Structure formats: structure tokens, C-alpha cells
Amino acid sequence: MAEDLDEIREKKLEDLKAKQSGDGAGTPTSPIHIDGAGDLQSTADEHGVVLVDFYADWCGPCQMLEPVVETIAEETDAAVAKVDVDANQQLAAEYGVRGVPTLILFADGEPVERLVGMQNESQLRSLIASHTGA
Image (tube, rainbow, N blue to C red; front, side):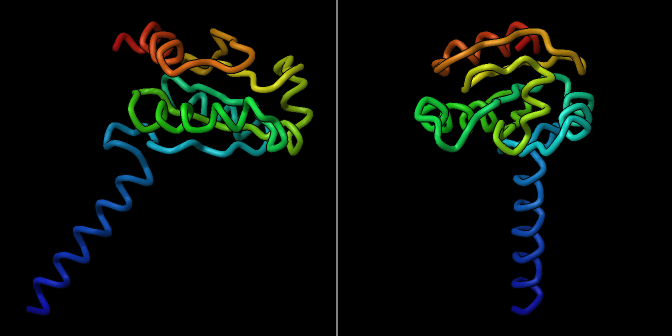
């Protein structure tokens, strides 16, 4: 009985670690919070396609976009990164973010697409699919 419980605990721990790190293919299933340019570049380099959400806590459209971004992180092959523009003003300026939400899609470590304002899930899915081949 104790062995069964240990096996169950080990399985649950493995499942939890897999969920936190991604879907097994190396893509995280929840958004990665970015703190600084080095963090963003290493995330973009580490994952093939990364959707970066430049947002602010006080921004209504950003709050409306939050569940869409979380779904994209869970259900697509793209990694999703979030950058708080208030905490990372220099990084936002470096990428020319003048309004929030701004979404920048990185492919192979380079920014390839930019969307400003509220976006729907299907738009984001097709944008990601055009760069992942999915």
C-alpha cells in the first residue's frame, strides 16, 4: 500500500513538472513573465516561435486579452511571454511599444510580426500557424 502511494506521488510530481515546463515538446503551457531584455532574448532564442505580450496591469484591453493569451500558450506550439511595460519601460521602448497591448511574434529569435490592440484568438492562431507550419 505504501509503495502504491509512493508511485502515485511520483507520477503526480512528474505530471506537475511536465505541465510547468510545457507539453513535453519543450514549449511552456503557461505564459513566461519576462524581466529585462536579456530575459526576453534568451526566451526568444530558446523557443522557435514566441508570442510576446507587452501589457500593463491598468490596461482594460490587456485584461481582456489575458485569457486569449493563456489559451494560446496552452494550445499552440508557440511559447507565450508577457512583458509588463511599467516594470520594463526600457525594453518596451527598445521594441517601439507605444501602446498596450502590443503583441510581437518572434520566430528563430527575431521579431517577425507586430499587432497592436485587442486581438481575437483565431487571428493569433493563424499568425502562429504561419510561422510554425502547424
